[in-house]
Image 1 (tube, chains in turn blue, green):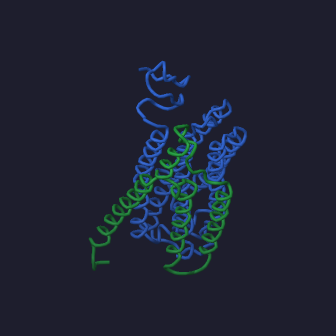
Image 2: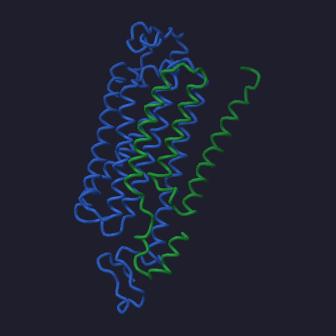
Image 3: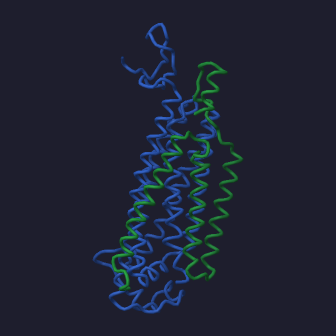
Length: 250
Length: 113
């Protein structure tokens, strides 16, 4: 039997109980459909935890092996930008949570505004991240052929390193700072990619919400996207202290 | 799940989905404020010299923040037992994998540090 999204089925026409147009035929109730969808979303998020978990584990192990290099590398990050970005991301999580509430209470205007706010804050996060990346590029702190250990073998030449009073590292240890920045770009880059995907989906959702979707009682999409967005927030909640904060006094 | 079943008996088979728990904006605002305060605390704590406790405090605060996000923003506190079990199983698997990997790395060169 074809699954028509346009009209709710009438009991007489189809020979089964009437149901909302958005309920799929293989689910007995709307509750069952919502539970199954949310379960699937959580399973996807668990695979994401394992994916990021591998990088977190690599970071922990290498930080213990090449401790002085990781401390010196970490001193190159700006706590100001990191803190500001944490605030921006937490705010976007809040506007997303409010968006889910507006969808639940069927208020279109509020939902659209919340989605736009989340969209803008997400872009703001990426903007700040690109300021930080630009500085790394300028200083040749991007791993690869043009990587420079100058800030670490000669900290007096580097503003950030001299502010921390870093001691010069021996060349072999200084080279391991490249590993710190490799992990820095891998982790923040994968996080940023998740943000970019999220922002694209948000753009699509803004269009559909303006057309009246999600405020008709069928909120699974908004709700499950919210789970994704909060998950991305959680990853940053751990990245921020590990990359920016814990090496300040080391 | 049990609350949904109760509603079915009372209100008949209208749209059950509307009856799922709606977290109020006041709760969201409280959690938002708590997350901002915790961010301030973790940055402040990083400026205090605490030796080995610097990373422990930083990760401790991060765990608290993540828990607040999972419980309230992600509605796990109000979700079905299936969701709670899924989250718990994921956390357990993650910790087991990290724990086994780290214990391997720690013990390989035991006594030769």
